[in-house]
Image (cartoon, rainbow, N blue to C red; front, top):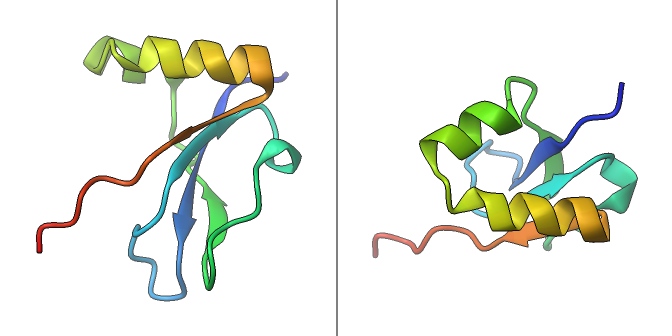
Length: 78
């Protein structure tokens, strides 16, 4: 079964400094940032996420139409 998946860019220290991507497969993702790699979020459920945050609907539609959609990382708390 093909379903929308969530991927997060992470470094070796497992901190989530990078972007979040939504795609149907990992091969649709752009290259990760320097010293980062894409990690799948196995507990991701698109329906639950869009119920919590309706603004994700547009991002999910872009992923469906284009194969992948990228969300910028949250601003740092510096």
